[in-house]
Length: 157
Image 1 (cartoon, rainbow, N blue to C red):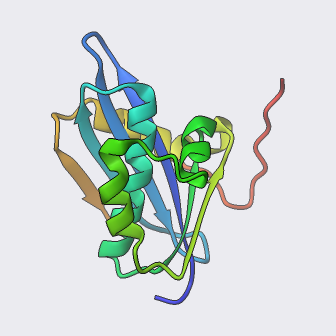
Image 2: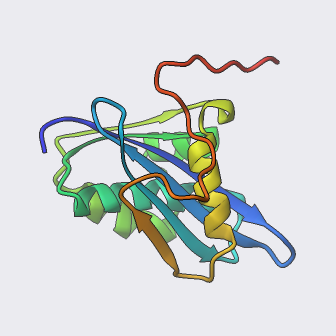
């Protein structure tokens, strides 16, 4: 309960009509995988999918009895919204409930190039029906690649 868990999140929107998904990779203080979450969101915008993934991370961390969490997302717009308490109205009550008794909460941005595990989980979610949840305590087959905690990933602009 005392150590921080790291939650890498991502949202995905694919197809026509669009189907969204949320993905979260949970890691302990040693950066070992504690669980992988994929959720089917139905028809949403990419911003809604990204924000919903952040909320699912906080909710699942609470379910895991964790009160110190670090959420990383590759959507700067979503990070800005949560950091500035400008959370989409449809998610505000869930966010408030999930974060009510936290001792520590950090929401930060990570480049997409360093977030491909959560991206795979989100893409899986976008192929699942609305409300379907996949949760496992280890890396599932649909997450074919996952970030190495001790490797540097680059972005060239």
